[in-house]
Length: 192
Image (cartoon, rainbow, N blue to C red; front, side):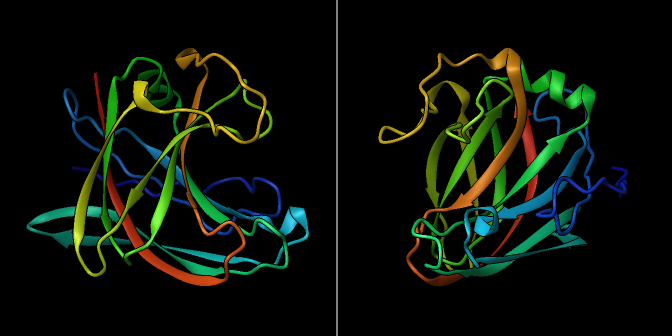
């Protein structure tokens, strides 16, 4: 499996780090991704996030891993931080037809949102669900695209259109409750 690191363009002032990972063809194909972060600074917040990429051998396999850490503050009422995996063009085309995807996490015990971002959603009310990590343990999270929903309590509701697939995002669920987070994400896989 060949790993490629890609230089990425700055996506606003919020992107701190990015890279990509590649892999096999067929069922469970991984594609190539550019990684970056975002936080609540644009909303007047002060939450912090850091992303460190590394190449690691885990259970005999070589992976590009992404350690994400930081701190949520309540300077912005709904303080948050998050990160994304932006696909290259062929992988983005795959996102338009998958039925599910998976990823692995070395957890910190916190709960996070996983979101399927589409280009027609302009207020960040992307289709989502939550997952809970286990502190110090690796877990695999499998997400059915058809099971994701927009938030009930905010955002402009739109019919899900997978043809507008943009990227996969993760975000803290603290909603302004101060606290730290520290986890590692790797091995995104796409399934038809």
